[in-house]
Length: 464
Image (tube, rainbow, N blue to C red; front, side, top):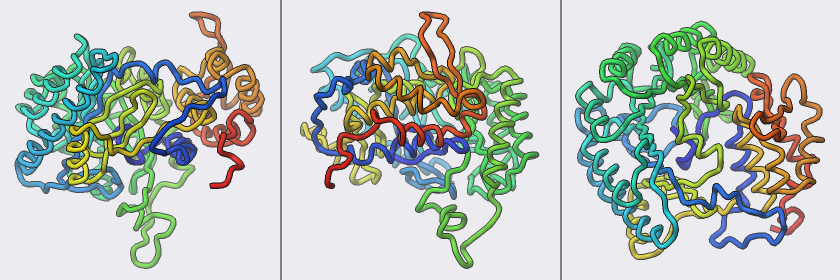
């Protein structure tokens, strides 16, 4: 699932970007935002611009995977089990879209350029419901002519007829939840599909001529070793995936995996079998080398794409731009504010009722003071192959911030990071090296946080 949902998503080995920024931002959640008077408190223009993207959370799953801590609604494995609850949920979701639009239209708005259906398992939802939601978004905000419409789909949850119906509804990009091509690994992870269903789903991507499709793989699952990992990489390459997302398992509190493999696992519940940190790092290196040799661009720490096939929607997050969020647990980023919707169905329905009354009961996170804005900018830009434009850092945050970045990253230059000059305008770009720089990026971020005075929060030193 994507980083717009209110949960901790998997991230590749050793960098913990999302966790780092969440820890950094935790003090900034409050009901009202008062901008700092500091010159370096400028808000990114992209964050203030009208949203051109929408994330839609569809929470229904046949079962909960052992590693999952996302907001999901388990419906069981019987045929069409999600149909009735999905229709009821979609009715509330469409109400939320319309209520949001009624408020948004008092301000500037723009046609949507990307829509992402995440979950959950969106492929469990009837195709006509997907069409209704897309129609509601079109009516509310408009859709650009080349709008990218992505849907997460799991093997075993759809057939050719349903896939074609999704495409007729407007879906033109599929994110396929493969995770592994090994039956034992899939079983140990609690996935509801097997390798045969993975192969069938991949075959349908070709048979139905899906314009773009991506495969998700997880390297840190129990039972994964160098051999099974290489097999999965080679299989997605042979299958012709346009895009590959490569994650390393994050063991989250409250999951079955945490009970079995977490730091507090004891007694009969404790299990062994997760790859070591070194093994996971080697798998990350192998993904970089294998996919790179096959022509995939490693454009973000967890993301690889054939030329021209980057996920347009996810780049909205790395650019810290604006997006709408709809549905249970979805987070939006509009006018510099992040609003997280409730994670429980009943509470989400109450949220929609309140929204229609002109109230906003979501949890608001403002991003905090200027130091938080700078840290978030660094974190998001360094996770991409495009890197961080230091001239733009100077424009937005001042020369002192840029000097502090230069001083803090100096020990990492060479093996882990490098400076380059933009061919477009001659500006200085700081990039992390692939793969070694990405692997130590948590350490780089920690070094920046500890050494940069510009990252000292305005709240630092104040009593809680």
